[in-house]
Amino acid sequence: STSPWTLGVQASSASFVNGSNTVPVGIVSVGNVAGQSVLVSKALSTSVQTITAASQPAAIGQTVGVQYSISGANAATLISKPSGTYTTTVTYILTAL
Image 1 (tube, rainbow, N blue to C red):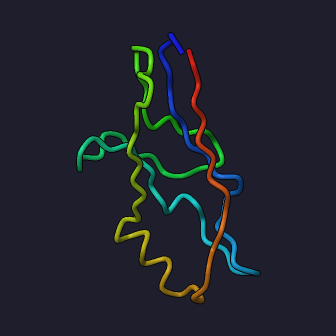
Image 2: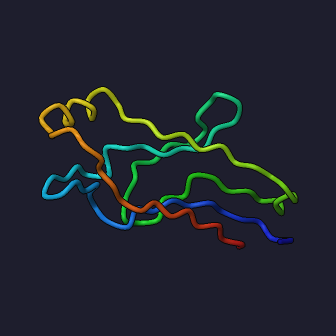
């Protein structure tokens, strides 16, 4: 594209699901990284969260690093949850402006 752009992230549902057990997706933060530094971090949500933007056109083969994290306070909410695989769908949205 020859346009500026944004990259957003969005969860398909408000919770990670494992049978009848749920965990809110908002406990996970998603951010873009440059090297090892998180530049922008947003709580995962069913609304599109912009995690990076560029005022210049994207270069062919340009990469964007993404980091997922859970804070210590949010991790504490997982202690009472049964073990297992909790799932949701995470979609990345690249938009030319």
